[in-house]
Length: 309
Image (tube, rainbow, N blue to C red):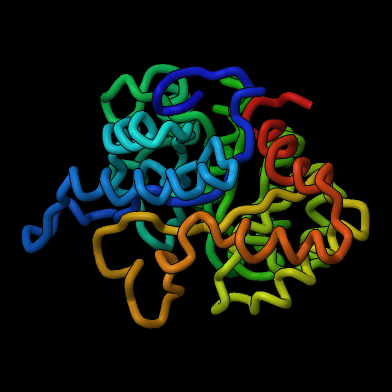
């Protein structure tokens, strides 16, 4: 399911599994000092997506969950004008960032129902449907609300058949997420644990049957370019190419302070083409075949999003 409607799995093509086409944090819409220029957001985003399309990108997953400030209508316009499919997310971000108090009062059953409605009927009282579930957790043990979101995500997955992608922090956070998903009865083969920057943890996740997101390409603050390249190559050489997905976690257009603070990566500089300009050529230099690159960018995303092997 994309923001412009359902497409065949074979139409997804080259897919960036974790990006942010439009991003603003919870509460942005309550700040009377700022406002969003819809047309500017669409124009900027369309230019970036068209540039990615020149490198063969056909689908982008916008990884904003429902407790961020989402604009499904903007995503629909951007997708139509850029002619790039956009898959939107339901789900919830970390309790550390804050949940609306209303959501803290809801049970796992309530949250799962909300996720399923967003997947089956539409997001934010629109007819624009989400196509994947996003969950997130911070450093340290999973909090009670993070746990609640995971149980709800698994319940919604079982009801709708949707895939799950995650945001994780720290070397063990992803494995903690996957264990919680398994304990709730989730299907690891439809789960991508994101932001895996450690080869031991990535292998542990892959060995349990889930997908591994090497999805912060270009984020030098988290890991140098050479180290991340080495991480990707290690996973390929160890035989895990069929479970690795590549992406940037870039922010195409944003409002608010967090995404442009001086101590955060300058995501806009990398856009959605850094992977193709800087990473794939070096992978090819190390002997990575076209089939392996296609697995990580076409086949594996299709498996997560559509369950097609």
